[in-house]
Amino acid sequence: MVEVGSEGAFGVNSIGLGRSVFPLSFSVREAGGSWLVNTAPVQTRELVDVLTRSANDAIVVVDLATVSFLDEEYQQWPPSRIAAAQGVDCAAHPLGAWAAGTIGLGTELLVLDRRSLPRFLADWSPYELSLVDLPTGAEAGAEAGARAGAAAAGVEPDAARLDELALVVGTAVYPEPLLPRLPGSRLYYSGHDDCYAAIESLDPALPAAVLGRMLALLAGPALTGPDQAAPARVPEPDRALPEQLIRESPHWVGVLGPVTGTTVTVDLSARPHPWRLDHHLPTRVDRVASLDLVGGGWRLAPAGAPRA
Image (tube, rainbow, N blue to C red):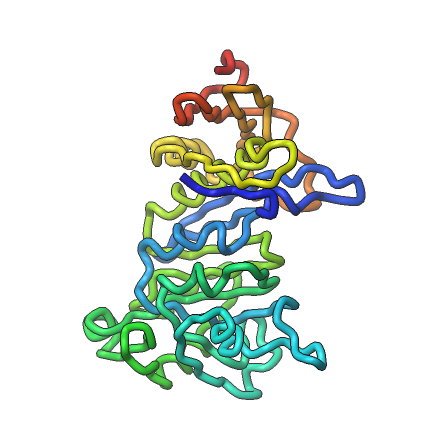
């Protein structure tokens, strides 16, 4: 189950002055042993548990921008001060002026335990956020020459390792994968406007997990009720459903379909290429995903099949 409130990405994002519906978009590709996923709209905190399932214990915040934490001169707090305000233990590694202005890289790296991410992200919104996991302890010894870096694991960050990570992130060339240049790391995440997510993972199960979560998040606003006061608890589809969709096409667009007292439907359109904000929404529906509100399960059917 995933909890979906009215302040989630599907509830607050829209397109144009007419506030047209913002569709679910999802794309996946494999390159260099990494799985690269782009999806929207989604807030980092709506994906954080999915992202960290197969990540190393230490997470490095390599870039962070927000207007949620500003000083009296309207300058953003350093990430370490934000972590302290959120009650999260961490280790900070300053990069200095050389990192200023580098896309995807801040001037202070923050190392924290992956289990602390939900608390770190609670009740505020970053409009830029980049994360990389880091091997620690036995993982670091086996995979990265005994270089460690998680404060939550009781190990001080290795400055050379963090500088190396910053250099790799700061010189990344899109759309080339990043993880092959970071031995031992398994996850890279970049979020923009707390809406657009670019994810790279070594876990082949992650793309289906992300698509399944996105379907549940899209269905959520239909279940929050007219006052939208209480969040809805929405079941996620079994892994087989998003896996089937990915086998059929790497690119999908989804919009909420008919909603009844017993069923929520999502109309899904396969695309030959990733959907972009300046693209028209597809008019052809290829698959319909239906959530049975009585039984709590999802099913997938071809377009035109009788709806549940």
